[in-house]
Image (tube, protein in one colour):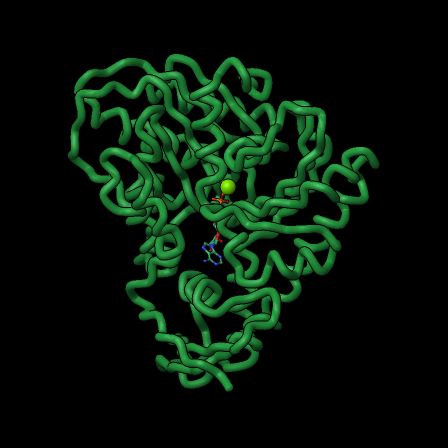
Length: 378
Ligand code: ADP
Ligand code: MG
């Protein structure tokens, strides 16, 4: 038997937000809603130390002593003719798939590399300025930005340039898997090995960390976006229904799974009929969506296997003892922990608040600079 779930109304879907209610519980000052940065609330407190998680799907900014103060999609709406940025963050994400002619919704970090330097720079500068402009007392801040572990020198320079033009005094960088490991409280500076799997929007990072370094790193350009794409294709092939990425993401979050559910669930999906061209609603069930997501999920499983195979034996035995932790928004896929555990024979746990692990880790680095200095680069 299948239990029916409330269908998600397509025009108002804001899936990435619904998954992170816990953010509202953060002791963050000025954090009025999980995904909204209050535009005018000003504070006397200067923001002198700032951490930024510039993710492929979401950007989070934390101010030392305050917690997470900004959490917005890494999306910019760009006017095609002039290259001018119309909006950044949630407003721009709402435009994805709905932009009028001449306006493009761009995700500059989409594949875990900076695909569009100009937009990425403007986006980072915009988010930093949003946080800094709310301050009545201004100081030039020290900023730590989390970057993908395989970042190139050219990309580093783009991050440096945009930070500089946003008025940053000192910029440091930390590899994302390292920040995630610190965020979940792993003893990264000890000789024992720990494995972190971060499933983000554009990428999955599998890293083994020991002695403040990344010992092996298997990264693939498959993450939540790929799952959305496979749902788009499944709906087209099986129901002749055209849906956009945002609707596909909502389906994934509402009924998507990596392992069988008990009970299986279903929901209504709205889109455009391929044949008649008219709007149409169909009912889909979680077993079908699981089938649709199977290919990208198995790519993630394979990346984990490869990382385990490349792990030196001493560290492998540590991982056997400690298990693996899942972080990033993709950790919220139902049953992904169970599937990975069955496939590897290891204990797999998901962080209770996987979307904030990386920025929390960077915040911990700010709190205990002396201990973590060795994981930072310039
Ligand atoms: P990044 O670090 O690359 O910006 P995030 O860690 O913010 O990525 O994760 C974003 C991804 O997580 C998106 O693909 C989003 O659809 C997915 N996601 C968020 N919440 C859920 C959920 N409840 N179930 C499945 N996937 C989710
Ligand atoms: Mg991330």
